Image (cartoon, rainbow, N blue to C red; front, side, top):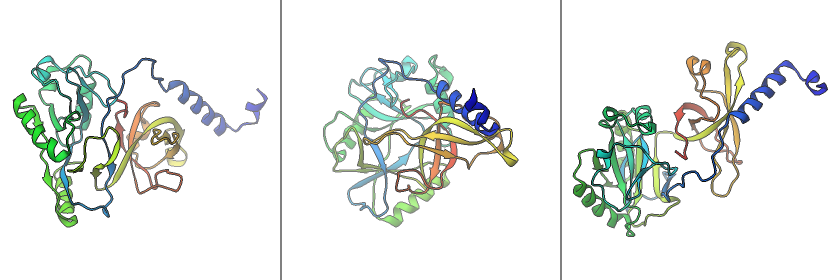
Length: 297
């Protein structure tokens, strides 16, 4: 076509990448799983007071919601856990993390995603329960009820997440440093006076040595110079939230040579690090961290 003749080779390549990207992104089918009403965390601001907060480790696993009958993902999809794993669980909802161990995120995801549960893989999974969504009381009141519920389940792979009262900023930083040195991801801070709110809330905060978030891969941008012939950057889309439309940005740093040779597939999700946001809400100094699970999963 006349327009194509006027385009440069680079333009044609980028255009073809974009066409392939939009065709490859899977669309969610009508009538798909309904996400449970979960409480989601805000990023902790060091200027925020620590009075009345409970602190726990942030476990690097897969969010698991027990609806009283079925274990589900954050997106509402049924998890095909072995029957013995959830045998005897209560009819009240539980909120927790399916966790294999520090630094074993990929193994946790692979195990939970498998629709034909691998018995030996599930033997390594722990369900770390951190809240009772339907309790109705404050977190100060939910915490002893949570511990009692887990004791009644009486299964070694079901454990109540340990919470300790926050004291001051220096002690919190020391705990964060020690947790990260031991291979942990970070900390969670839960407001004791808050009720379980099914939305993103400052009553639940996450604290890590760096900020990170997830975005969906829209396209691969061809590399130039030393990266010629392989991926140079990713076009990413941030999930829409708080009534704001989805935004897109290009991520070109943090990749190993192997990751540029075999980049995350179009339609998949990645985790990236960043420092604060621009006035338009885009991440500053973003750098690739790893592949991630779809937030709907």
